[in-house]
Image (cartoon, rainbow, N blue to C red):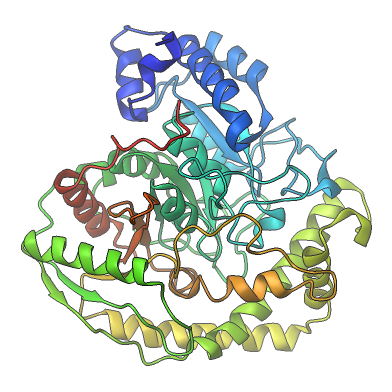
Length: 478
C-alpha cells in the first residue's frame, strides 16, 4: 500500500479532520490525490484537465479556515469558471478559452478550503446522459469499463467512485448529478432551485432548471458542502427558502415516520428496466422496515410525452444560448466543424426557436410543475427509479450521420424521472442502495418538497446507516 492509499477510504470530512488535528498537511493529501489520479485515470479517463501545479501552490500557501480545508477536489468542465484554467464544455471549440475570474460557486468552494486538483470529463455541453465527448474521449465506468458512467457529470461520479477524490463538483439540468451517481454507485443530490449561486455571469438557466452541487461518497459530505456553498448571491433573480438550521445537523437526526410514495411508471415515458423496478421495490421495503409509511402504486396525472415537447424546446434553446454566449466570451464564431454533429444539429434547432415559442414552453413547464407540486404535497418524499435502465454499454447514445439527434431521442427514454426535479425545482437525490446481478450499481431517487433538503438528508443518513455503501469498491479503484 502506498502513502496515497492511506486516505482512500476517508471521506472529505474525515480528511479535513486529520488536517485540523495536525496529523497530515494539505500538501500530503494533494500529493496523494494526484498519485491516485495518475494511477487510475488511464483506465477510466475521468480527469481531463490536471491542475496539479495550482493545487500544490494552494496547498503550500495560506488556506482559509473552512469545513474542508486542505481536501483535494475536482471541478466539472461546464459552467464553473476557475480563473486562468480552460473551460471547454467538453468541446474542442473552446479548447483555448480560459476565463479571467472565478465564478461565485468556485469562490465559495475555495472559501470552504477545498483544493482543486483537476477538471472532470463531461459530455459536450452536457447534452447527453453519458460522458463520451469526441474531444476528450469516453469516461469509463469503474464498475465495468465497457459501460457508461452516465452524464453529463460522469467524470465527477467516476472519480469519486474510483477513490481519486472523496468529493467532486457536478451540475444538473436534466439529471446530470443523479444519473452518473446512479451509474457509478455514489451519492448525488440535486438541491432546490437557486439553492446554490450561478453568478456572476448567470442568474437563471433554462427557466431555472440548472442546479449546482456535487457527487460524494457520504451523505455528511454532501450536507456540509451545501452548507458551505448555498445562499443567494448579490443580484440573484430569486433564491431558495433558507433552511431552519445547517444541513449537516440533519445528518443523523431522526427523520420521524415519513410518508413516502412510490412511483415506478410515467404515462408516455416507456418501460422501466426490471432491475430498476426491483431496486425501487427493494428500497421501498427498506423504508417500510425502518418504520416509514410507504404507499405503492402512486401515479402522476401528467403525460411525459407532453412534458418532453416543452422540455426539449427549452433544452435546444439553452444549447444555442450557451454556445453563442460562450463564443462571445471566447471571441470565436461557431462553426459546424468544431462541434459534434449532434451538438451542431441541436444548436441549429435551438437557434431557430422564437421568443414567443420559448416563453410558451416556459409557461407550459411551470403549469406542469404546479400540477406535480400539488400531487406531491401529501408526501414527505416520493421514491422513483433514478434512470430507466442499468448503466448502458458505451456507444449506446451514438448518432449516425443521417440521424444526428437520435442519441438525444434515446436519452429521452431513460431520464423521465430525473427531469421532474429540474422543471419543478424540487430537491432530489440518487442513493446507492442496490446492485444488480452483474454487480452494477442501480440508484434509486427520492424527491423532497420544495426547499426541504433537510428531510432528504435525514432520510439519506438513515438509509446509509441501515445499508452502508461507502465500503463497496468497483473493480477499477484506487
